[in-house]
Image 1 (cartoon, rainbow, N blue to C red):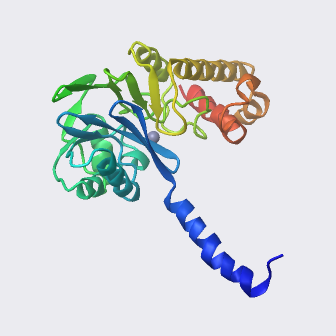
Image 2 (image 1 turned 45 degrees about the vertical axis):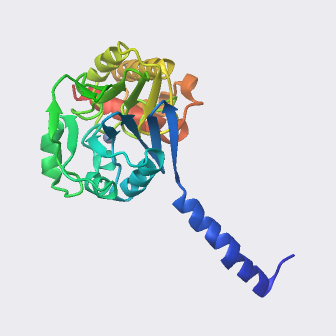
Image 3 (image 1 turned 90 degrees about the horizontal axis):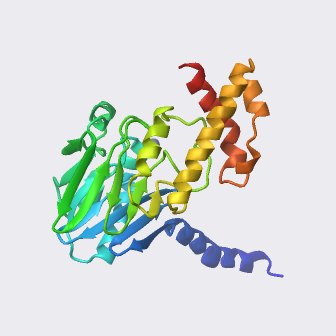
Length: 286
Ligand SMILES: [Zn+2]
């Protein structure tokens, strides 16, 4: 057994540096398709795409994350300039950090793409770390970056009124943030979710010929992941609608609805009954 002074020294020289390393190393960059990289920072994901013109980056995530994000881009694509940033939506925990990202890549005033509805939210937040977009669109935008095309879709409100879905056609990859996840229930009381519009948007999303999904949180998925999300929210909505028509209160609905077929999904234990509450509030106020 190691005791006293020696264990203290062991702690200082082995355990403490290991912990610091583990904290600092809580990110990873993975190539999902040729020149399409997912960057994970703690619980948040974003991506970047290498094009003949330079790098297109998506959500900067935060001022802290974006510095590491920039370093990772420089490692994977040395010497290539950052030419554009696209915000998936206006929520600060995904869109913040564009200035720090540009600074770490040694560029300034590059194109920032977002949905037109994101602008008032971003201006209202008045956060210098979240600069407003320079390019906006309403339904669909297609940009050819020197031969590699990136398409941006907006199918109406899903989670916020401005969430866009970027699609890289030559890689079959979409980036879908917050409104869907891979075999995971929704976040807590489904803040910023918009039903029933969400269902129309997910149906339209399935018209895009994608194969792989990079989500804003958690592991990657495919077309089946999106279809299962549709079924989950549809089952949730049906159960809550039935509970309301039986005269159940929000508390009673949260206590009685279980949807056991999803109990193996991520965050079910923590968030499922909160999802019931969120859906209950949405349906009963409409
Ligand atoms: Zn969000």
